[in-house]
Length: 300
Image (cartoon, rainbow, N blue to C red):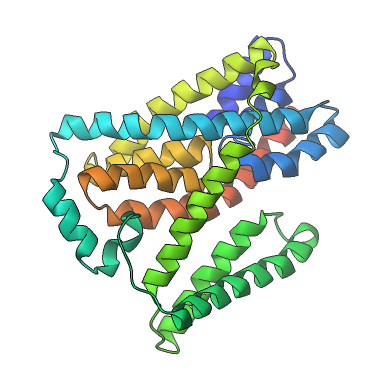
């Protein structure tokens, strides 16, 4: 809501179509490239905003870059206020050799031992999530809220894991899930950076660049004075603030990468790694659709 209010307000002040403010608000920043690609054609066909898709992709790219740039410094500043010191090399070494599943995803560089059977089982579960997402994607546009495919993947993954562990007493092999997860995260960030068309940003109109710059400042202030304060003003809250900068401007993988950079230096934060993927990759997309629909009805 804050991003849309800032975007629409500044667009109006700067003489732009208020809908451009939405495209430089939660459509692209909280929503990312997927939401920008979904809403762009709608803005062009139904509301007459020419070039909305191109603008959305450029704004999402801008957000992806700056979401990764500001997360670490924001969290580091908050952690320094607490007087927390980086963990020593000996502690890092002990954590990397300790096979503790509680913080397995937070230590991206830890060595893990996995077997071929575990790898195949993990890939099979991934395939089941992808198949479910394909099925739901063909129905949600007609009968439900139109959500990105990855949201349905995550939703089915949550159900699948809980059913298998609770009803069938099957132990999940978290080390295999973690290896594939970290590898996928690295590949996503590499492909995103390789596909960045930063030259598109240089051709943006000055007012749009101003809106995006203000959105970055607003995200920093919100993460510092709202996210951090509401979540408890402790170390977990600082890591959550870094994650919020990641998915608040970019994408959930950016948020996870931000948090991993912090936890590699200052230690684990189980709460942050539980909350951010669920909120950033699932709940926020549902809420974003509702909020965007409300703003569109108001601006009609």
